[in-house]
Every structure is written in C-alpha cells, then in structure tokens.
Length: 141
Image (cartoon, rainbow, N blue to C red):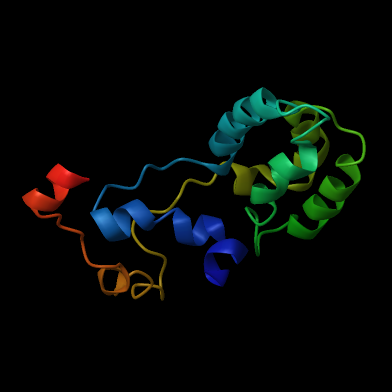
C-alpha cells in the first residue's frame, strides 16, 4: 500500500495492463490533471462551510510527481497555494509551473516498469475467495 501512496503514477498507471491485460492508455499527467480540475472544481465547497477545500481535494495528487524533476518545488508551491487558491484551475496555474513539460506530457509507458514485473504477480492470491450464495440463502435474504 505504501508503494501506491508514494508513487501512484509508476504503480497505478500499470494496474489495468498488469492485472487485466488491457493495453496501455498512453494518458499523460497533464491529461489526468485537466480531468481532475473539472472534478475538483465541481466538488469544492459542495458540503458547505468551505468543505471540501483545495487542500482536501488536491491531497490525492501530492505524490503524482514522485521522484520527478520539480517535485519538491511543486509541493512547496502547493503548500503555499492551499492558503489562498479558491479553484483547482488557479491552484494548477500557480503550482504546475514547477513541473517540466517533459514530465507533464510523458505518457504512461507500455507494460510494467522495468524491474517491477513482480509488482502484481500474486494479486489474485491476496484477494478473498469469491462468495457464492446458495439459492436457498438468496431466497431468504
């Protein structure tokens, strides 16, 4: 779990390919952030009393640039932007200047990252067994 939280791009970007055999989508971080901006702006303040706020909505993104150039500066800019940004658009405009275009526009590489072929090798062993209800139990449920 810690691997996923620390490096979601390198791990979750390959889940569908590694587990389901789906072809790589080739999506970029910039495309993901454009979609996330729409989502984020639609939920900001939705619960009233300014909840969720920018910090709460942006928190899942904080490790999107793990081990990439500009990551440290991006996090510092994000910390500052949490204080005054009111929209995801303004948050991204202020913070993403720290990330090089080459990082933002690099697609998810096809297949599992080199040296990580075993990342999802035993995933089916980790899942609980499928539940099969008997017909009699389903009738009385």
